[in-house]
Length: 71
Image 1 (cartoon, rainbow, N blue to C red):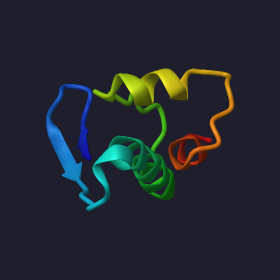
Image 2 (spheres, helix red, strand yellow):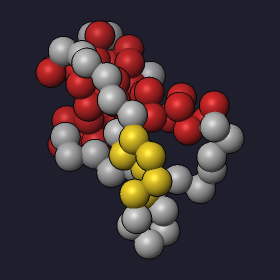
Image 3 (cartoon, rainbow, N blue to C red):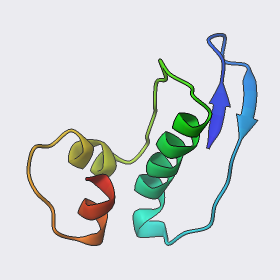
C-alpha cells in the first residue's frame, strides 16, 4: 500500500504477505484499518481488481472468505 498526497507525491508505504486470491481485498482492509489508526480522513482508494471493486460495491451477500473480508 502506498499513500500519496493531493499532488501525487509519495508520503509513506506499508506491505504485507498474503495469498494472491485475497491479496487485494486484504490490502484494502488493512489500508482502511491503518489509515483509521492514523486518524486520516478524506482518502481516495484505487483498486486494480475488478472482482474486489464489484463485490465491494455490491449489495449481495458472499459467504466465502473473500466476502467475509469485504463485509
